[in-house]
Amino acid sequence: MDHNKYQTDMLVADVNDIEDVVQKVSAFGWHVVRIDGHDFDLLKKTFSELKNITDKPKMVIADTIKGKGVSFMEKPVMETVSGKTYYKWHSGAPDDDSYVKGLDELTGKILSLADKFGIGKIEIPKNKAEGKAITKLDKEFVTEAYGDALVELAKTNDKVVVLDGDLSADCKLRKFEYTYPDRFIENGIAEQDMVSTAGGLAKMGLIPVVNTFASFLAARANEQIYNNSTEKNKIIYTCHFSGIIPAGPGKSHQSVRDISLFSALPNMTIIQPCNALETKKTVEYCVNEAKENCMIRLVIGPSPEKIQLPDDYEFEIGIGTELTGGNDALLFGYGPVMLHEALVAFELLKGIGFGLKVINMPWLNKIDLDWIESITKDYKKIFVLEDHSEIGGLGDRILDALAEIHSLQGKKFEKIGLDDYPECGTPLEVLEYHELDGKSLAKRISGIDDIDSKLELEMQTGKYTEEAPQ
Image 1: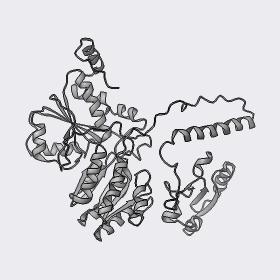
Image 2: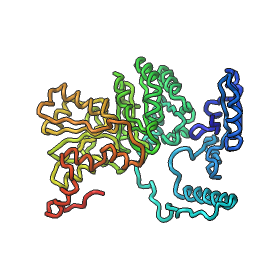
Image 3: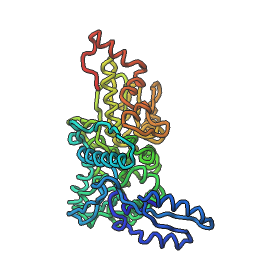
């Protein structure tokens, strides 16, 4: 057991104290030893000695320091506003200055050890962080808009209670936590308990807003979510870190089946906003207007671009918004990541004279039948781009709606989503691997495999004079 005393960014003792672990585990008849987890000689000796214990299960409790090796990462921060102790380095990349500072410290230790052991001169690669850094200041985070909307709504609605699974910083809930400490419940990394608590709060007439990463909430607490749903009270489940991107943390964090899990509940509305404005509208709807359970699906990273909605935009149940014009094919998408790729595809296709109409559809399980009939009637090619498995997402809902109004005859309908487990890597690497990037979408929608050559030809003949998107 790596006993570093923290959950994500809070002390275990402050959230749900597990007390004396040695005493607890020993009470079940285990052989337990507690050691310094940073002492490699002691670790080796301990594992060797444990081979002699053959009549009972064994446990090593390794006391460790989170961030060991980088001095400033070893130290927690005492927050003056709340008086609580936080650890800020668990998740996310460090800022540029901290990265350089930490790298220099580790480099110094490597050189010192090399000298101590007589290894000789070691060439350290030049620090790639030098020079002008790309900052996140010009990026839009829908989670920031989400946290701000909760704080604003709580001013006039005293029934709003926010629950967190030890991800307050990542889910941008800290402002709510500081503003309304009596209406903020930190449950720790215990999603099933958190959802059950929300059920009790809803039974009391409050509006619980449950927050954690989508893959943890949709799957781990699925049974409790189902049980709560049967009681017909309103609970808002916010699934952060939804979809394929960011893909660095790997499959455990990439949530690509949450829509299907929530869609199986009859009294559930599922929404994924595309930008800050739509996020604010989504939270307002779920808190003040919705009569049933809601699931809000949010990406956690910065949006690849700020999705621009039309000036006359209205947030209406079951109705999407046209982002581009085009008469050759229709593409439905949702969320900032995939809508960005859809817009890249639009620009590429425009360059070869192919018109793609892109629709932002935030209502993932609510389709207005009159609207869907109107928007699709003049199109023979209809595509749905998923930030999810091809199974159980928006595509299935649109397909069902078109079948219900008998509007599929003579049309090509295709879902474009994940048909395998998601890969790990940088955003572009992963999107290209699964052929969900803009260029791959343009090829698939147009049927032109060598779209680069086609685009180059059009430019040479003067038919396409705009700069191709990067």
